[in-house]
Image (tube, rainbow, N blue to C red; front, side, top):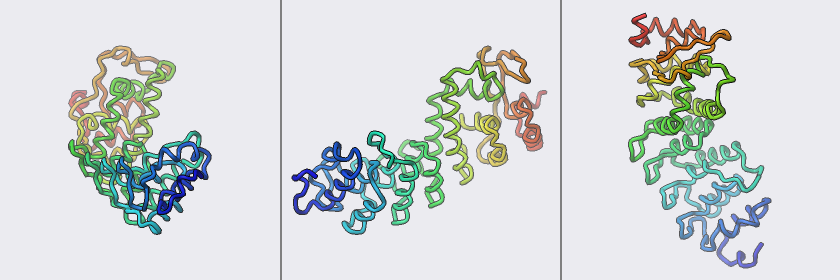
Length: 315
């Protein structure tokens, strides 16, 4: 260990340095990560970072290290950095040190659970009004969202821009609006996989991960207030064969005011039983999609519950 780090009174810093230096990449980066004015469990650097903040963000950490900082050095588990982020929020933003195998999702979840068990405020908000649930959504961490909700996190908390964690999830999905539009209407309806571009395939994988997070919110009683969400959610569940979530969406702000409109003729190619149907100006409702996918149980459920668009009623 560099001699200048052995100054008297820099015990909290020494603990962090030692933990990092025991890892493969710690020696190379420890000086940059831990400025010299970490002099106690609650001493912070010029960037407003506390030792516990640094410990939970990097891969070379252990429960023992966090425990030492909290119990031995009285580190404040509720301390906020200059952006108002707590250790619980920051542990979700794990940073890999090269190929450090110590940084796994389970390790991060273990630290998160440890912080919650030791009194971390799961509903604390940063300067943008985001709580830990918002940050878990940003990281696409289904298990983190699940753990936070089980621990009592408020799923309805809105940030300074009026966005709940679920709203934030949909905003991220809409960054890929164009490929998702094609995905929802042709691919999800049986478009030939050989005609699907790489970009759309990537979006499909992204959507699968985000759906895990979304269904967790649904099971926790979330209301779908986002207009785009109302238009797309049932078709998404139908494609990924998440039939059990279809009944849950009824009465949760999901109403079929309009079918999903596609004005791209190429995107209107539906592959059914190896045949291609060209349907220009295609409109797709959840009821129609259920029939196309031969999911007659769900189609009957939607019909019996009058979950139909105007186009469905005109047929």
